[in-house]
Amino acid sequence: MGTRGRPKGQPSDRPSWPDERGTDLTTLPSYWPEEMTEAVLAEAVHAPWLDGLGEHDEPLWERWFERALEEGVEESLARLGRAVIRASVARGWDDELHAECGWLDEGEAMLELALLEAERAEARWRFLLERD
Image (cartoon, rainbow, N blue to C red; front, top):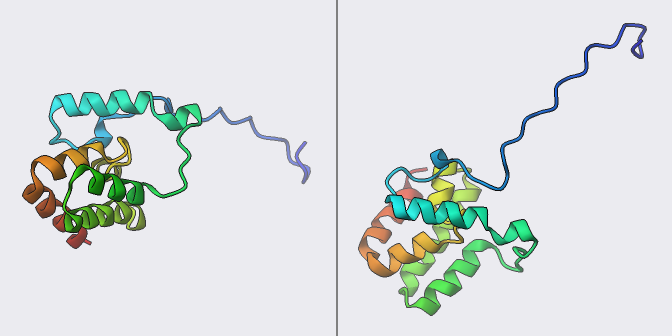
């Protein structure tokens, strides 16, 4: 019997959680080349936070900014990249945009874009910031 004199209902089924060690392809940007998608998926499977090594003192956007400067990205573009990573969380963007903004690969794809195609990176990141 329940607490109010009614019989208890059937126990509910255990919720089915997705495998936390992998990632769904639908959350990755659809325009990424296949090699990049495979690299991000491989990194996600071996992500340091799964081993307890992913704890950092600074948020991702600050770590990315510092690394971008070290790698030779112009400061103004590095600031813009930092703003995009931060905005993806603050504005509650969807999973595909979170992936584009570095949350699955610690910003590796963003850094590569900034180094190889700075103008394209700037145009895309400005578009993302202005869309909300």
